[in-house]
Length: 597
Image (cartoon, rainbow, N blue to C red; front, side, top):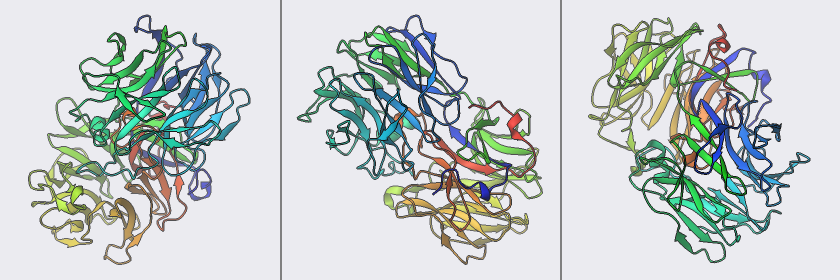
Protein backbone atom coordinates (compact mmCIF):
# COMPACT_ATOMS: atom_id res chain seq x y z
CA UNK A 1 0.00 0.00 0.00
CA UNK A 2 1.30 3.44 -0.98
CA UNK A 3 -0.08 6.86 -0.20
CA UNK A 4 1.29 9.37 -2.70
CA UNK A 5 4.13 7.81 -4.66
CA UNK A 6 2.43 6.26 -7.69
CA UNK A 7 2.65 9.27 -9.99
CA UNK A 8 4.46 7.17 -12.58
CA UNK A 9 1.36 5.01 -12.97
CA UNK A 10 -1.12 7.75 -13.91
CA UNK A 11 -1.20 10.52 -16.49
CA UNK A 12 -1.66 14.18 -15.61
CA UNK A 13 -5.36 14.16 -16.52
CA UNK A 14 -6.77 11.23 -14.52
CA UNK A 15 -10.15 12.31 -13.16
CA UNK A 16 -12.29 10.12 -10.92
CA UNK A 17 -15.87 10.87 -9.92
CA UNK A 18 -17.59 9.14 -7.00
CA UNK A 19 -20.30 9.32 -4.37
CA UNK A 20 -19.33 11.10 -1.17
CA UNK A 21 -21.80 11.20 1.71
CA UNK A 22 -20.56 14.22 3.62
CA UNK A 23 -21.70 17.74 4.43
CA UNK A 24 -21.37 20.20 1.58
CA UNK A 25 -20.61 22.79 4.25
CA UNK A 26 -19.82 22.70 7.97
CA UNK A 27 -19.47 26.03 9.76
CA UNK A 28 -18.53 26.92 13.34
CA UNK A 29 -20.72 29.09 15.56
CA UNK A 30 -20.46 30.51 19.08
CA UNK A 31 -23.49 31.35 21.22
CA UNK A 32 -24.55 31.77 24.80
CA UNK A 33 -25.13 28.48 26.59
CA UNK A 34 -28.87 28.73 25.94
CA UNK A 35 -28.32 29.21 22.19
CA UNK A 36 -29.00 32.95 22.13
CA UNK A 37 -26.79 35.50 20.35
CA UNK A 38 -25.40 32.96 17.89
CA UNK A 39 -22.62 34.26 15.66
CA UNK A 40 -20.23 32.64 13.16
CA UNK A 41 -16.74 31.94 14.49
CA UNK A 42 -14.89 31.47 11.19
CA UNK A 43 -16.11 31.06 7.62
CA UNK A 44 -14.20 29.07 5.01
CA UNK A 45 -16.78 27.76 2.53
CA UNK A 46 -15.38 24.33 3.33
CA UNK A 47 -15.77 21.93 6.26
CA UNK A 48 -14.93 23.17 9.78
CA UNK A 49 -15.98 20.87 12.63
CA UNK A 50 -15.22 19.26 16.01
CA UNK A 51 -14.23 22.39 17.99
CA UNK A 52 -12.71 22.21 21.48
CA UNK A 53 -12.34 25.15 23.88
CA UNK A 54 -8.99 25.51 25.64
CA UNK A 55 -8.85 25.35 29.48
CA UNK A 56 -7.92 29.04 29.74
CA UNK A 57 -10.61 30.06 27.26
CA UNK A 58 -8.19 31.87 24.95
CA UNK A 59 -8.24 29.41 22.04
CA UNK A 60 -10.66 27.16 20.19
CA UNK A 61 -9.02 24.31 18.30
CA UNK A 62 -10.97 22.68 15.48
CA UNK A 63 -10.67 20.50 12.39
CA UNK A 64 -10.81 22.02 8.92
CA UNK A 65 -10.59 20.72 5.35
CA UNK A 66 -10.11 24.23 3.95
CA UNK A 67 -6.61 23.43 2.66
CA UNK A 68 -7.28 19.86 1.53
CA UNK A 69 -6.90 17.08 4.07
CA UNK A 70 -8.39 17.33 7.56
CA UNK A 71 -5.95 19.30 9.74
CA UNK A 72 -6.07 21.02 13.12
CA UNK A 73 -6.41 24.80 13.42
CA UNK A 74 -6.92 27.17 16.31
CA UNK A 75 -8.58 30.56 16.57
CA UNK A 76 -9.43 33.02 19.34
CA UNK A 77 -13.09 33.00 20.48
CA UNK A 78 -13.63 36.36 18.77
CA UNK A 79 -12.61 34.83 15.42
CA UNK A 80 -9.15 36.42 15.21
CA UNK A 81 -5.70 34.85 15.13
CA UNK A 82 -6.44 31.85 12.89
CA UNK A 83 -3.45 29.51 13.14
CA UNK A 84 -2.82 26.16 11.45
CA UNK A 85 -1.46 23.58 13.90
CA UNK A 86 -0.96 20.52 11.67
CA UNK A 87 -0.09 20.17 8.00
CA UNK A 88 -0.06 16.52 7.02
CA UNK A 89 -1.72 14.57 4.18
CA UNK A 90 -3.14 12.19 6.79
CA UNK A 91 -6.45 12.70 8.56
CA UNK A 92 -6.10 14.80 11.79
CA UNK A 93 -9.25 15.35 13.88
CA UNK A 94 -11.04 15.22 17.26
CA UNK A 95 -8.64 17.32 19.32
CA UNK A 96 -8.79 17.68 23.11
CA UNK A 97 -6.62 19.83 25.41
CA UNK A 98 -4.57 18.75 28.40
CA UNK A 99 -5.69 20.45 31.67
CA UNK A 100 -2.87 23.01 31.45
CA UNK A 101 -3.55 23.69 27.76
CA UNK A 102 0.05 22.92 26.78
CA UNK A 103 -0.69 19.69 24.90
CA UNK A 104 -3.39 18.42 22.55
CA UNK A 105 -4.38 14.81 22.06
CA UNK A 106 -5.97 14.09 18.69
CA UNK A 107 -6.95 11.35 16.25
CA UNK A 108 -4.77 10.79 13.19
CA UNK A 109 -4.08 8.22 10.47
CA UNK A 110 -0.41 9.16 10.14
CA UNK A 111 1.12 5.86 11.25
CA UNK A 112 -0.61 3.13 9.23
CA UNK A 113 -3.78 4.61 7.79
CA UNK A 114 -6.03 3.62 10.70
CA UNK A 115 -7.21 6.00 13.42
CA UNK A 116 -4.82 6.27 16.38
CA UNK A 117 -4.15 8.86 19.09
CA UNK A 118 -1.19 11.23 18.95
CA UNK A 119 -0.15 14.10 21.23
CA UNK A 120 0.72 17.52 19.82
CA UNK A 121 2.75 20.32 21.40
CA UNK A 122 1.13 23.48 19.95
CA UNK A 123 4.22 25.55 20.73
CA UNK A 124 6.68 23.41 18.75
CA UNK A 125 4.19 21.62 16.44
CA UNK A 126 5.87 18.34 17.38
CA UNK A 127 3.48 15.35 17.34
CA UNK A 128 4.20 11.95 18.90
CA UNK A 129 2.17 8.71 18.78
CA UNK A 130 0.24 7.58 21.85
CA UNK A 131 -1.69 4.50 20.66
CA UNK A 132 -1.19 1.97 17.89
CA UNK A 133 -2.42 -1.39 16.76
CA UNK A 134 -5.46 -2.95 15.17
CA UNK A 135 -8.71 -1.03 15.00
CA UNK A 136 -9.49 2.63 15.45
CA UNK A 137 -9.27 4.96 18.45
CA UNK A 138 -11.63 7.94 18.72
CA UNK A 139 -12.85 10.90 20.78
CA UNK A 140 -10.03 11.34 23.35
CA UNK A 141 -10.59 13.32 26.57
CA UNK A 142 -7.90 14.33 29.08
CA UNK A 143 -8.78 13.94 32.77
CA UNK A 144 -8.84 17.18 34.83
CA UNK A 145 -6.00 15.88 37.03
CA UNK A 146 -3.91 15.14 33.93
CA UNK A 147 -3.29 11.47 34.82
CA UNK A 148 -5.45 9.73 32.21
CA UNK A 149 -6.72 10.06 28.68
CA UNK A 150 -10.07 8.38 28.07
CA UNK A 151 -11.07 7.39 24.54
CA UNK A 152 -13.35 5.07 22.62
CA UNK A 153 -12.03 2.27 20.41
CA UNK A 154 -13.12 -0.66 18.26
CA UNK A 155 -9.75 -2.41 18.73
CA UNK A 156 -11.39 -5.51 20.25
CA UNK A 157 -14.18 -5.71 17.66
CA UNK A 158 -14.38 -7.66 14.41
CA UNK A 159 -16.97 -5.17 13.10
CA UNK A 160 -19.70 -7.73 12.35
CA UNK A 161 -22.31 -7.04 9.66
CA UNK A 162 -25.65 -5.55 10.63
CA UNK A 163 -28.48 -8.07 10.83
CA UNK A 164 -29.44 -9.08 7.29
CA UNK A 165 -27.05 -6.51 5.75
CA UNK A 166 -23.53 -6.12 4.43
CA UNK A 167 -22.89 -2.84 6.29
CA UNK A 168 -20.82 -3.08 9.46
CA UNK A 169 -21.88 -2.55 13.06
CA UNK A 170 -19.61 -0.42 15.21
CA UNK A 171 -18.78 -2.16 18.49
CA UNK A 172 -16.94 0.43 20.56
CA UNK A 173 -15.60 0.30 24.13
CA UNK A 174 -14.19 2.96 26.45
CA UNK A 175 -10.51 2.79 27.41
CA UNK A 176 -8.05 4.67 29.58
CA UNK A 177 -4.37 5.25 28.90
CA UNK A 178 -1.67 7.30 30.63
CA UNK A 179 -0.29 10.29 28.67
CA UNK A 180 3.04 8.44 28.49
CA UNK A 181 1.37 5.47 26.76
CA UNK A 182 1.27 3.10 29.74
CA UNK A 183 -1.61 1.62 31.70
CA UNK A 184 -4.01 0.87 28.84
CA UNK A 185 -7.24 -0.66 30.16
CA UNK A 186 -10.85 -1.06 29.12
CA UNK A 187 -13.49 0.22 31.55
CA UNK A 188 -16.75 -0.48 29.68
CA UNK A 189 -18.48 -3.80 29.18
CA UNK A 190 -17.58 -5.30 25.81
CA UNK A 191 -20.22 -6.32 23.27
CA UNK A 192 -22.22 -3.22 22.42
CA UNK A 193 -21.41 0.47 22.01
CA UNK A 194 -20.25 3.10 24.51
CA UNK A 195 -18.45 6.17 23.22
CA UNK A 196 -17.33 9.80 23.50
CA UNK A 197 -16.13 9.73 27.14
CA UNK A 198 -16.10 13.03 29.03
CA UNK A 199 -14.62 13.39 32.52
CA UNK A 200 -16.36 14.48 35.67
CA UNK A 201 -14.59 17.28 37.53
CA UNK A 202 -13.15 14.93 40.17
CA UNK A 203 -11.45 12.73 37.53
CA UNK A 204 -13.09 9.65 39.08
CA UNK A 205 -15.61 8.83 36.36
CA UNK A 206 -16.54 9.45 32.74
CA UNK A 207 -19.89 10.13 31.10
CA UNK A 208 -20.52 8.25 27.85
CA UNK A 209 -23.43 7.51 25.52
CA UNK A 210 -24.40 3.88 25.02
CA UNK A 211 -26.60 1.82 22.70
CA UNK A 212 -26.93 -1.69 21.34
CA UNK A 213 -24.52 -2.80 18.65
CA UNK A 214 -27.38 -3.19 16.15
CA UNK A 215 -28.46 0.40 16.72
CA UNK A 216 -25.09 1.65 15.47
CA UNK A 217 -26.56 0.66 12.09
CA UNK A 218 -30.24 1.56 12.55
CA UNK A 219 -29.49 5.09 13.77
CA UNK A 220 -27.30 5.67 10.71
CA UNK A 221 -30.19 4.94 8.34
CA UNK A 222 -33.00 6.41 10.44
CA UNK A 223 -34.80 3.16 11.34
CA UNK A 224 -33.94 3.00 15.05
CA UNK A 225 -36.88 2.33 17.37
CA UNK A 226 -35.22 2.74 20.77
CA UNK A 227 -33.50 5.56 22.60
CA UNK A 228 -29.92 5.97 23.74
CA UNK A 229 -28.94 7.22 27.16
CA UNK A 230 -25.95 8.78 28.85
CA UNK A 231 -24.21 6.62 31.43
CA UNK A 232 -21.61 7.48 34.06
CA UNK A 233 -18.81 4.91 34.52
CA UNK A 234 -16.70 4.81 37.69
CA UNK A 235 -13.14 4.24 36.45
CA UNK A 236 -12.05 2.30 39.54
CA UNK A 237 -14.93 -0.17 39.83
CA UNK A 238 -16.49 -0.06 36.38
CA UNK A 239 -19.91 0.46 37.97
CA UNK A 240 -22.40 2.44 35.91
CA UNK A 241 -25.42 4.60 36.56
CA UNK A 242 -27.77 6.35 34.12
CA UNK A 243 -27.49 10.11 33.80
CA UNK A 244 -30.33 10.90 31.40
CA UNK A 245 -33.60 9.48 30.10
CA UNK A 246 -36.17 10.47 27.52
CA UNK A 247 -36.64 10.24 23.76
CA UNK A 248 -34.11 10.27 20.96
CA UNK A 249 -30.46 9.50 20.49
CA UNK A 250 -28.28 11.35 22.97
CA UNK A 251 -24.79 11.86 21.57
CA UNK A 252 -21.85 14.25 22.05
CA UNK A 253 -21.97 14.14 25.89
CA UNK A 254 -20.24 16.89 27.85
CA UNK A 255 -19.67 17.66 31.53
CA UNK A 256 -19.70 21.39 32.23
CA UNK A 257 -17.48 23.06 34.87
CA UNK A 258 -20.54 23.25 37.13
CA UNK A 259 -20.91 19.48 36.90
CA UNK A 260 -24.04 19.66 34.75
CA UNK A 261 -24.24 17.18 31.89
CA UNK A 262 -25.11 18.32 28.36
CA UNK A 263 -25.55 16.46 25.09
CA UNK A 264 -26.93 16.65 21.56
CA UNK A 265 -30.31 15.03 20.96
CA UNK A 266 -31.18 13.60 17.52
CA UNK A 267 -33.94 11.35 16.12
CA UNK A 268 -36.65 13.11 18.12
CA UNK A 269 -39.11 15.97 17.49
CA UNK A 270 -36.93 18.43 19.42
CA UNK A 271 -33.29 18.29 18.34
CA UNK A 272 -30.15 20.17 19.26
CA UNK A 273 -28.24 20.77 22.50
CA UNK A 274 -29.97 19.82 25.76
CA UNK A 275 -28.94 19.82 29.41
CA UNK A 276 -29.69 17.05 31.91
CA UNK A 277 -31.58 19.64 33.95
CA UNK A 278 -34.07 19.92 31.08
CA UNK A 279 -33.18 23.34 29.75
CA UNK A 280 -32.41 23.64 26.03
CA UNK A 281 -29.36 25.01 24.27
CA UNK A 282 -28.64 25.73 20.60
CA UNK A 283 -31.43 24.12 18.55
CA UNK A 284 -31.50 22.26 15.26
CA UNK A 285 -30.84 18.88 13.71
CA UNK A 286 -27.66 20.29 12.15
CA UNK A 287 -25.84 20.94 15.47
CA UNK A 288 -22.70 18.85 15.97
CA UNK A 289 -19.92 18.52 18.54
CA UNK A 290 -20.53 21.32 21.06
CA UNK A 291 -17.78 22.46 23.44
CA UNK A 292 -18.21 24.88 26.33
CA UNK A 293 -16.06 27.77 27.51
CA UNK A 294 -14.31 27.20 30.87
CA UNK A 295 -16.96 29.22 32.70
CA UNK A 296 -19.80 27.37 30.93
CA UNK A 297 -21.34 30.63 29.71
CA UNK A 298 -20.70 30.07 26.01
CA UNK A 299 -20.69 27.12 23.64
CA UNK A 300 -19.03 26.56 20.26
CA UNK A 301 -20.38 24.01 17.78
CA UNK A 302 -20.61 23.23 14.08
CA UNK A 303 -23.68 23.21 11.86
CA UNK A 304 -23.75 20.74 8.96
CA UNK A 305 -25.42 21.33 5.59
CA UNK A 306 -26.05 18.16 3.56
CA UNK A 307 -27.88 19.72 0.61
CA UNK A 308 -26.59 18.18 -2.64
CA UNK A 309 -27.17 18.11 -6.39
CA UNK A 310 -25.66 15.75 -8.97
CA UNK A 311 -23.30 18.52 -10.12
CA UNK A 312 -19.64 17.60 -9.46
CA UNK A 313 -17.64 19.18 -6.63
CA UNK A 314 -13.86 19.06 -6.70
CA UNK A 315 -12.14 17.36 -3.75
CA UNK A 316 -8.64 17.01 -2.40
CA UNK A 317 -6.54 14.00 -3.42
CA UNK A 318 -3.54 12.40 -1.70
CA UNK A 319 -1.96 12.13 -5.14
CA UNK A 320 -2.35 15.35 -7.19
CA UNK A 321 -2.03 13.35 -10.41
CA UNK A 322 -5.54 12.11 -9.73
CA UNK A 323 -8.27 14.76 -9.76
CA UNK A 324 -11.21 13.75 -7.57
CA UNK A 325 -14.81 14.95 -7.81
CA UNK A 326 -17.88 14.03 -5.79
CA UNK A 327 -21.46 13.61 -6.99
CA UNK A 328 -24.38 11.34 -6.05
CA UNK A 329 -25.10 7.64 -6.53
CA UNK A 330 -22.94 5.42 -8.79
CA UNK A 331 -21.99 7.79 -11.64
CA UNK A 332 -20.86 6.57 -15.08
CA UNK A 333 -19.10 8.50 -17.86
CA UNK A 334 -20.07 8.27 -21.50
CA UNK A 335 -17.33 6.90 -23.82
CA UNK A 336 -16.29 10.40 -24.91
CA UNK A 337 -15.87 11.63 -21.34
CA UNK A 338 -18.07 14.66 -22.06
CA UNK A 339 -20.93 13.79 -19.69
CA UNK A 340 -21.90 11.35 -17.00
CA UNK A 341 -25.08 9.62 -15.89
CA UNK A 342 -26.12 9.42 -12.25
CA UNK A 343 -29.24 8.74 -10.21
CA UNK A 344 -30.69 11.21 -7.73
CA UNK A 345 -33.93 11.44 -5.72
CA UNK A 346 -36.42 14.15 -6.57
CA UNK A 347 -39.56 15.40 -4.78
CA UNK A 348 -42.14 13.79 -7.06
CA UNK A 349 -40.54 10.42 -7.87
CA UNK A 350 -38.45 7.86 -6.05
CA UNK A 351 -35.43 8.39 -8.31
CA UNK A 352 -34.46 10.09 -11.55
CA UNK A 353 -31.73 9.26 -14.00
CA UNK A 354 -29.75 12.44 -14.65
CA UNK A 355 -27.19 13.29 -17.30
CA UNK A 356 -24.60 15.95 -16.47
CA UNK A 357 -22.90 17.53 -19.49
CA UNK A 358 -19.47 19.06 -18.96
CA UNK A 359 -19.89 22.55 -17.51
CA UNK A 360 -23.72 22.36 -17.49
CA UNK A 361 -26.31 21.79 -14.73
CA UNK A 362 -27.65 18.28 -14.27
CA UNK A 363 -30.78 17.44 -16.30
CA UNK A 364 -33.18 14.55 -15.69
CA UNK A 365 -33.80 12.25 -18.67
CA UNK A 366 -35.81 9.43 -17.11
CA UNK A 367 -38.02 9.09 -14.02
CA UNK A 368 -39.56 6.03 -12.39
CA UNK A 369 -41.22 5.13 -9.11
CA UNK A 370 -38.81 2.23 -8.72
CA UNK A 371 -35.23 2.74 -7.59
CA UNK A 372 -32.75 3.23 -10.44
CA UNK A 373 -29.16 2.25 -9.68
CA UNK A 374 -25.83 1.66 -11.42
CA UNK A 375 -26.16 3.26 -14.89
CA UNK A 376 -23.63 2.29 -17.57
CA UNK A 377 -23.23 3.68 -21.11
CA UNK A 378 -23.08 1.62 -24.28
CA UNK A 379 -19.73 1.82 -26.13
CA UNK A 380 -21.32 4.01 -28.84
CA UNK A 381 -22.81 6.37 -26.22
CA UNK A 382 -26.36 5.93 -27.53
CA UNK A 383 -27.88 3.82 -24.72
CA UNK A 384 -27.74 3.53 -20.94
CA UNK A 385 -28.37 0.32 -18.98
CA UNK A 386 -29.10 0.16 -15.26
CA UNK A 387 -30.78 -1.83 -12.53
CA UNK A 388 -34.33 -0.90 -11.65
CA UNK A 389 -36.50 -2.18 -8.80
CA UNK A 390 -35.72 -2.90 -5.15
CA UNK A 391 -32.16 -3.50 -4.02
CA UNK A 392 -32.47 -3.82 -0.25
CA UNK A 393 -33.42 -7.52 -0.27
CA UNK A 394 -30.24 -9.08 -1.62
CA UNK A 395 -29.44 -11.97 0.67
CA UNK A 396 -29.84 -13.21 4.21
CA UNK A 397 -26.34 -12.59 5.56
CA UNK A 398 -27.28 -14.32 8.80
CA UNK A 399 -27.54 -17.54 6.77
CA UNK A 400 -23.96 -17.31 5.57
CA UNK A 401 -24.69 -15.10 2.59
CA UNK A 402 -26.44 -17.83 0.61
CA UNK A 403 -30.19 -17.52 1.16
CA UNK A 404 -32.16 -15.14 -1.08
CA UNK A 405 -34.77 -12.96 0.61
CA UNK A 406 -38.09 -12.67 -1.24
CA UNK A 407 -36.54 -12.12 -4.68
CA UNK A 408 -39.96 -12.01 -6.40
CA UNK A 409 -41.42 -9.12 -4.41
CA UNK A 410 -38.10 -7.56 -3.46
CA UNK A 411 -36.14 -7.96 -6.68
CA UNK A 412 -34.87 -5.86 -9.54
CA UNK A 413 -34.31 -6.18 -13.28
CA UNK A 414 -31.93 -4.68 -15.83
CA UNK A 415 -33.43 -1.90 -17.93
CA UNK A 416 -32.20 0.01 -20.95
CA UNK A 417 -33.06 3.46 -22.28
CA UNK A 418 -31.80 5.67 -25.08
CA UNK A 419 -29.33 8.36 -24.00
CA UNK A 420 -32.06 10.96 -24.39
CA UNK A 421 -34.44 9.05 -22.10
CA UNK A 422 -36.75 7.42 -24.66
CA UNK A 423 -37.58 3.80 -25.52
CA UNK A 424 -37.28 2.28 -22.04
CA UNK A 425 -37.58 -1.48 -21.79
CA UNK A 426 -36.54 -4.31 -19.49
CA UNK A 427 -33.97 -6.75 -20.85
CA UNK A 428 -34.02 -9.29 -17.99
CA UNK A 429 -37.00 -11.06 -16.45
CA UNK A 430 -37.89 -13.82 -14.03
CA UNK A 431 -37.92 -14.23 -10.25
CA UNK A 432 -34.28 -13.28 -9.66
CA UNK A 433 -32.82 -9.99 -8.47
CA UNK A 434 -30.86 -8.82 -11.54
CA UNK A 435 -28.76 -5.66 -11.42
CA UNK A 436 -25.42 -3.84 -11.87
CA UNK A 437 -24.99 -4.43 -15.62
CA UNK A 438 -21.87 -3.57 -17.62
CA UNK A 439 -21.46 -3.54 -21.42
CA UNK A 440 -18.77 -5.51 -23.21
CA UNK A 441 -16.56 -3.26 -25.38
CA UNK A 442 -18.23 -4.66 -28.51
CA UNK A 443 -21.65 -3.47 -27.26
CA UNK A 444 -23.18 -6.84 -28.14
CA UNK A 445 -23.08 -8.38 -24.65
CA UNK A 446 -23.46 -7.35 -21.05
CA UNK A 447 -22.49 -8.89 -17.73
CA UNK A 448 -24.73 -8.49 -14.69
CA UNK A 449 -25.32 -9.83 -11.19
CA UNK A 450 -28.18 -12.19 -10.39
CA UNK A 451 -29.49 -13.77 -7.19
CA UNK A 452 -32.63 -15.74 -6.41
CA UNK A 453 -34.40 -19.09 -6.87
CA UNK A 454 -32.99 -19.41 -10.41
CA UNK A 455 -29.42 -19.32 -9.08
CA UNK A 456 -26.83 -16.69 -8.25
CA UNK A 457 -23.61 -15.29 -9.62
CA UNK A 458 -22.58 -13.39 -12.73
CA UNK A 459 -24.34 -13.83 -16.07
CA UNK A 460 -23.42 -12.75 -19.60
CA UNK A 461 -26.30 -11.88 -21.92
CA UNK A 462 -26.16 -11.66 -25.70
CA UNK A 463 -28.13 -8.47 -26.36
CA UNK A 464 -29.19 -9.61 -29.83
CA UNK A 465 -30.99 -12.84 -28.92
CA UNK A 466 -31.06 -12.42 -25.09
CA UNK A 467 -29.36 -15.78 -24.56
CA UNK A 468 -27.69 -16.02 -21.14
CA UNK A 469 -24.48 -17.79 -20.10
CA UNK A 470 -23.52 -18.42 -16.47
CA UNK A 471 -20.09 -16.97 -15.71
CA UNK A 472 -19.97 -17.69 -11.94
CA UNK A 473 -22.30 -19.34 -9.44
CA UNK A 474 -21.20 -17.74 -6.17
CA UNK A 475 -22.62 -14.65 -4.48
CA UNK A 476 -20.79 -12.14 -6.69
CA UNK A 477 -21.57 -8.48 -7.26
CA UNK A 478 -20.65 -5.24 -9.08
CA UNK A 479 -19.20 -6.73 -12.29
CA UNK A 480 -17.43 -4.37 -14.72
CA UNK A 481 -16.08 -5.33 -18.12
CA UNK A 482 -12.56 -4.17 -18.99
CA UNK A 483 -12.27 -1.66 -21.88
CA UNK A 484 -9.90 -4.18 -23.48
CA UNK A 485 -12.54 -6.89 -23.25
CA UNK A 486 -10.18 -9.45 -21.74
CA UNK A 487 -11.26 -9.31 -18.07
CA UNK A 488 -14.31 -8.80 -15.90
CA UNK A 489 -13.64 -7.41 -12.41
CA UNK A 490 -16.16 -8.07 -9.63
CA UNK A 491 -16.63 -8.52 -5.89
CA UNK A 492 -17.00 -11.82 -4.01
CA UNK A 493 -17.61 -12.45 -0.32
CA UNK A 494 -14.64 -14.45 0.99
CA UNK A 495 -14.05 -15.08 4.69
CA UNK A 496 -16.72 -12.60 5.74
CA UNK A 497 -15.55 -9.69 3.55
CA UNK A 498 -16.02 -8.73 -0.08
CA UNK A 499 -12.81 -8.87 -2.12
CA UNK A 500 -11.87 -7.83 -5.68
CA UNK A 501 -11.51 -10.61 -8.24
CA UNK A 502 -11.08 -10.84 -12.01
CA UNK A 503 -12.15 -13.51 -14.46
CA UNK A 504 -12.01 -13.89 -18.23
CA UNK A 505 -15.31 -13.73 -20.12
CA UNK A 506 -14.97 -17.43 -20.95
CA UNK A 507 -14.89 -18.28 -17.22
CA UNK A 508 -11.17 -19.04 -17.07
CA UNK A 509 -8.31 -17.55 -15.05
CA UNK A 510 -10.19 -16.58 -11.86
CA UNK A 511 -7.91 -14.43 -9.67
CA UNK A 512 -8.37 -12.82 -6.24
CA UNK A 513 -6.70 -9.40 -6.20
CA UNK A 514 -7.32 -8.21 -2.63
CA UNK A 515 -7.05 -9.99 0.72
CA UNK A 516 -8.14 -7.36 3.23
CA UNK A 517 -9.96 -7.13 6.55
CA UNK A 518 -12.78 -5.01 5.20
CA UNK A 519 -15.23 -4.87 2.31
CA UNK A 520 -14.08 -3.80 -1.13
CA UNK A 521 -16.80 -2.57 -3.49
CA UNK A 522 -17.84 -0.63 -6.58
CA UNK A 523 -15.03 -1.13 -9.09
CA UNK A 524 -14.36 0.87 -12.27
CA UNK A 525 -11.69 0.49 -14.94
CA UNK A 526 -9.40 3.23 -16.18
CA UNK A 527 -10.11 4.06 -19.85
CA UNK A 528 -6.97 2.21 -20.97
CA UNK A 529 -7.71 -0.87 -18.85
CA UNK A 530 -4.40 -0.49 -16.98
CA UNK A 531 -5.85 0.28 -13.53
CA UNK A 532 -8.84 -0.29 -11.31
CA UNK A 533 -10.42 2.21 -8.93
CA UNK A 534 -12.56 0.90 -6.08
CA UNK A 535 -13.92 1.70 -2.64
CA UNK A 536 -12.48 -0.04 0.41
CA UNK A 537 -13.23 -0.20 4.12
CA UNK A 538 -9.80 -1.68 4.95
CA UNK A 539 -8.79 1.40 6.98
CA UNK A 540 -11.87 1.11 9.20
CA UNK A 541 -13.89 3.75 10.98
CA UNK A 542 -12.24 7.15 11.59
CA UNK A 543 -14.87 8.31 14.06
CA UNK A 544 -17.80 6.88 15.99
CA UNK A 545 -20.46 5.63 13.61
CA UNK A 546 -23.25 8.09 14.46
CA UNK A 547 -21.20 11.22 13.85
CA UNK A 548 -21.03 11.28 10.03
CA UNK A 549 -24.68 10.75 8.93
CA UNK A 550 -23.44 8.00 6.58
CA UNK A 551 -24.59 4.37 6.31
CA UNK A 552 -21.00 3.24 5.74
CA UNK A 553 -18.61 5.90 7.10
CA UNK A 554 -15.52 3.83 6.36
CA UNK A 555 -15.35 3.67 2.53
CA UNK A 556 -12.35 5.29 0.87
CA UNK A 557 -11.11 5.40 -2.71
CA UNK A 558 -8.16 3.28 -3.85
CA UNK A 559 -6.52 2.48 -7.19
CA UNK A 560 -4.45 -0.53 -8.22
CA UNK A 561 -3.19 -2.48 -11.22
CA UNK A 562 -5.47 -5.29 -12.51
CA UNK A 563 -3.04 -7.85 -11.11
CA UNK A 564 -3.55 -6.48 -7.57
CA UNK A 565 -0.22 -4.61 -7.34
CA UNK A 566 0.59 -0.91 -6.85
CA UNK A 567 -2.31 -0.29 -4.46
CA UNK A 568 -2.66 3.40 -3.62
CA UNK A 569 -5.05 5.23 -1.29
CA UNK A 570 -6.47 8.47 -2.74
CA UNK A 571 -8.85 9.64 0.02
CA UNK A 572 -8.38 9.65 3.79
CA UNK A 573 -11.31 10.95 5.83
CA UNK A 574 -14.28 9.92 7.96
CA UNK A 575 -16.90 10.24 5.21
CA UNK A 576 -18.47 7.51 3.10
CA UNK A 577 -17.04 7.33 -0.42
CA UNK A 578 -17.82 4.80 -3.13
CA UNK A 579 -19.18 4.08 -6.59
CA UNK A 580 -16.25 5.58 -8.54
CA UNK A 581 -16.18 6.28 -12.29
CA UNK A 582 -13.02 7.02 -14.30
CA UNK A 583 -13.32 9.81 -16.86
CA UNK A 584 -11.95 9.29 -20.38
CA UNK A 585 -9.35 11.99 -21.06
CA UNK A 586 -11.13 14.86 -22.72
CA UNK A 587 -12.89 17.81 -21.01
CA UNK A 588 -11.95 19.61 -17.82
CA UNK A 589 -14.52 19.06 -15.09
CA UNK A 590 -12.73 21.48 -12.79
CA UNK A 591 -14.80 24.33 -14.19
CA UNK A 592 -18.11 22.65 -13.35
CA UNK A 593 -18.37 23.70 -9.71
CA UNK A 594 -15.93 25.65 -7.51
CA UNK A 595 -13.81 23.31 -5.36
CA UNK A 596 -15.18 22.37 -1.95
CA UNK A 597 -11.64 22.48 -0.54
